[in-house]
View 1 (tube, rainbow, N blue to C red):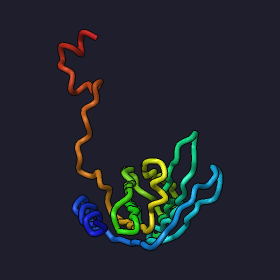
View 2 (cartoon, one colour):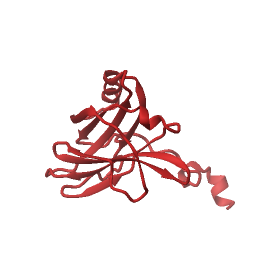
View 3 (cartoon, rainbow, N blue to C red):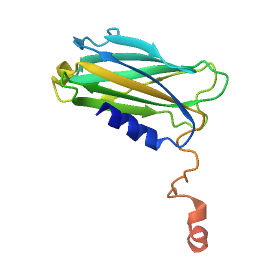
Length: 167
């Protein structure tokens, strides 16, 4: 299952990409809101990622945060795609999430951005998590490059001349 997730992500990438990854065993406990992350780890090459993962009870609902803060330590503007997956003791997938940086301007050199990433799980399922795998793809162009923008409802170029004059 771990290999399948990585192959799918690689198939989505249309530009040059470098990858950094981490994996290992992990055990989560429920923490109070405002508490420090239960798991913190740094990885990456030019884009340095700091994982801040924790499970909290917010308004009576268990919420699993698997977010990251990223900093571009390189000299060029970069984009990234972050994916994380969590597995039980039998290496079966419990939950996964992915977060791309889709901003056209990218992550400028020296800049830092925080990206919340929530893994939605049924109550108590975070206790089944025994291991994780996270990958950070560093891209030299955005994933959205070359895509046509959707037509907006009020785009004057898409409205016929007769309708434009009757407004």
